Image (tube, rainbow, N blue to C red):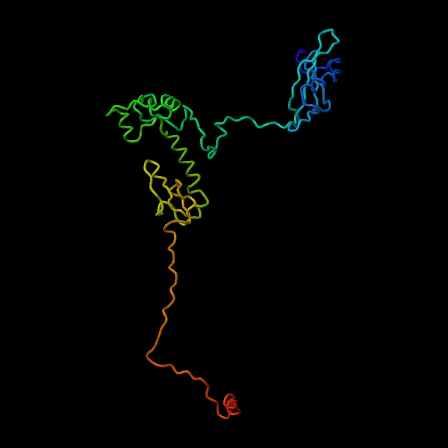
Amino acid sequence: MSAATTRSRTPRTPDRLCAEAVELARAAAEEAAAPGVVGEHVSVVAEGDRVVTHFFECKEPGYRGWRWAVTVTRASRAKLVTLDETVLLPGPDALLAPEWVPWSERLRPGDMGPGDLLPTDAEDLRLEPGYTGEDAPPPNSVVSDELADLADAEDAALTDRVVAPVRGSIAAVAEELGMRRARVLSRYGLHTAADRWDEAYGAKTPMAQAAPASCVSCGFLMKIGGSLGQAFGVCANEFSPADGRLVSLSYGCGGHSEAAVMPKPPRPAPPVLDSMRADEFTLHPAPDEGQVPPPDTEAADLGHS
């Protein structure tokens, strides 16, 4: 190991005059900070030859662990210490804000609200060029500069500038089929969407695991067109947790149309009436032999009267 390397790793000794200029550093920190937020002197660090930084505790609410750093210096062979800079720096245990994340990475499903605009990257892997018949977006596309100018001007007379596609061209056929879009969903975008929907309403969900049958045999399933129709459909059961959702054919819930048959309510038996003969009812039971019948109290009362 060379001597130069040894000297570079050896910590410098703070300059004596600069290290003693604590009051000068405190005055500079109090001038830069709000009144009463500069705390005790923490430490002194040598930044170079005749360059020293004084650290003071920061009492500002919300800046736990931060320190006021005041750097002082002096010229060679001079006894006058001057101020270099004052800055607020985080300490080893300082409370720091989380690392900044771009908005495109912070955005989550459901964050958009009314009036919000979500710009799409020109190189978005989820999209690919559509069947427009031309390289530039059509004049009536939302990504067209011409349409943006028309919206800003709010002049109805400028709408005549929109050029209609020639009849029989590829653009005209695509517009007639409803495919005249600047970009359409790519295969990658289709697969990522299918994976996302299958994760929410697929065979591996707890609801599907406990279901008596899958959606492929449910009468409430509405078929959809395209390649997604081979694996997904729309639930139309208002009592299902997936009502109005795009569900996997392997999904299922307790609202399956053929899961159980609703039992009919029991009907009571009709009353039986027999009016062809008279029923005999004994008002007083016949007395047993050797038993004295009870006195007729009602007749005795009438005779006494």
